[in-house]
Length: 240
Image (cartoon, rainbow, N blue to C red; front, side, top):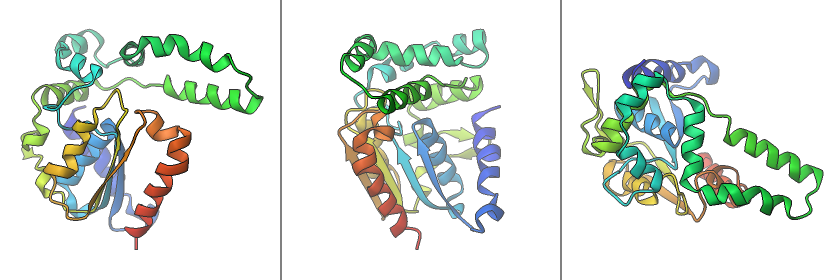
């Protein structure tokens, strides 16, 4: 497995399943590293992507970094992959927890310090289960993303190479919606903003910013009440 194969084979095969929707092009929606993959695919195959939605996507690492991004830049990624082959889910979960250990220690006492009904407790457990239900990341894909995109910042320079092809973000001309969490402690808002302010050629591009974090940008009450209706509205307008 490599980043090239991940994008040019796995993602390509998924997009080519036109018989499922009877559509000649698709809307790609990428969350975090999924946004990186969607961005790369859209640059290589712009004719197949009708709309691109990026959600808490890290791209520009020359800007102010989060704690996680700073750790990653100093990581001996080759040594890690050599030891584990694939990056284990428990390593990922532990890394996320260590970004803000006090929050983790206080979260459960604070939550259960108030009366909760059964529905609220079930929902809380469901969210916690989802948070820690990580899967291992393929070692070679992890290594290339960390080295080329995080450490060398090659994606914004249009110098990431997949096989013989260079990924040129200027080739992205389709409508783009960029969702940014200004309180995201895993992906800095500055890293995501650059996509729509400087890197792509799309004339139809929009940034949705919300003062919530990486996970809250998906499943918080604010997201359900304010963010997702806006995303749905944008998709409706761009699907006609």
